[in-house]
Image (tube, rainbow, N blue to C red; front, side, top):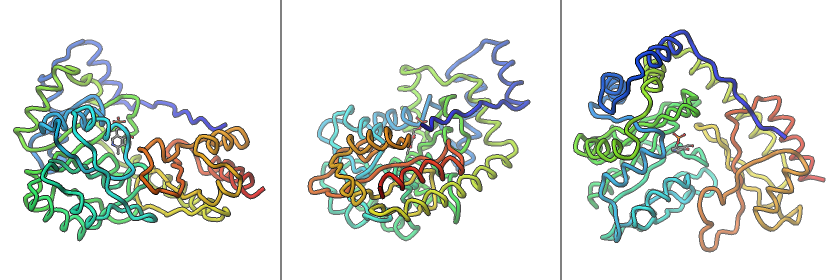
Length: 353
Ligand SMILES: Cc1ncc(COP(=O)(O)O)c(C=O)c1O
């Protein structure tokens, strides 16, 4: 069974900061460590106001609350989404309204968004370069979306967790479109590009009045993230980017190997996304072939027979009415190309046997 374990590696500067933090033992939600991190981070996105929070999900949750989303409100979210996003909306007492995606590329259908807008719609969650599908919006779609947002006076949560995990082309932020900075909060996590997953650090960038509310909520929820982690993030943002660039080349090779094997399997169809480290293949034919009619049976049987583990569609929200295709999500962030070839080779042999 593949359970990847990544060895933590600390650079010279990270060790220096860690020692400084241990020696001073000092932490404050508004001290110089915090301020410096927040300024560095916001300026990276060309903005002035940002706040550090303990992870990307906390950024989503506090942003929903800071925007005053509550009972009676509707929030548009993608069909497939990380559960913490829908959970934040439900916890606030609002209703998540899911919008269909293209069934192959998974791109959010902008024309469908407008059809779902009602007088109760307050917020749109835009997870461009999406988990679990890797879907992305084109600039033309962003522009169309900006018109809709203006017309219906909406706010947008731009979840940019995978902004930097892109193999070709250039990521762009919806918030950089004219007039959208005032209507958007950008959410980020240091778990992806900087592989600081275990360190737990997220951030939100947005208009000052909203960031001030997030700061007030956050100081009561969690005070603030540990300052040595924020120092680590400053180092990540401003230091040598060679390793962060190199890993993209490695991830691309893993993606290509995985997509190529998946598309060679009878009953599996996999789009090759240009971003994230996820694949979201349609496995309907493979499940039928093996006589495995539900996700749990499929997942468990594959794990027992091949040692390959994956999330299923159910980890990203309930199936929609009439949804008759089946999907799994594979992550290739913590597994090397040889292991991918071995694992998916076993998966292929099992499906085709
Ligand atoms: C789209 C997206 N947003 C936010 C997060 C939250 O990241 P974290 O809680 O690791 O900071 C994740 C984590 O996988 C994600 O996939």
